[in-house]
Image (cartoon, rainbow, N blue to C red; front, top):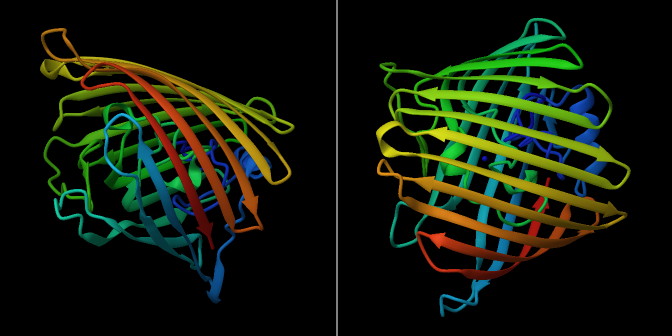
Length: 341
């Protein structure tokens, strides 16, 4: 679901309570907002001239009171990111992820290259990158280090772009930014990383961001992909002031013959010293080609957190989902320990 001015999903960018390097650039007002709400430091470890490493270890316990199954505990994800700052504005980043292989019914672990890209910064405003990288779209981040609570809302698979392979460019004018990507597949991420290499029927992602005053960020993305025959608009805005951060997001997707869908979330977070608490409301409805709802959910999340030193964050969560189509209602409890370095 990175850290880049023009990324949310990013920020995902700007929605990040933890600093990190899932994406490559933190700049301007967006960086100030992220730092203001960051409960855990993640500055990286210097290995040598221009070379540093950063990452995290994420573990959790969760249980669902409605499925009758015992609670689950384990390591959710371990990631190590290598960053190299070369000369003449050229840099590189490689992210290695270790976690459960969702495609393996045995639950076996999997290690793969999540991101690998080279960036050329032409000046303070314009840069380009090529390789495998995370989509700019979406308020909620793909990594746990970018979330204000334990769980993602759950509709990212319909509305967010994922890890992509191609070329991307960004322009940051301070209070205004533009971004665009031309990729093999916008939405085709699978467990183990993006696998699409064909340049036939490529997809693209376009975005615009405004940061008119300190603490306020708004971003609009349009994503189109011929391979999956999907067009999506993603719009989100956030405002941080004092210890408060507020965010709202709206998504609209046209899945051609497969159907359509929309969804939104509202989120508020308050942090004071080592303590924080997040309240989130979510709502989405996905229809098939016949106009029948196949995934329709409303719910809320309450998630307090506590920072233990600079590198360890403890998160608790209660989540209630009212599933009107596609499954039964659920009440989920979770405890998470997230260590960053």
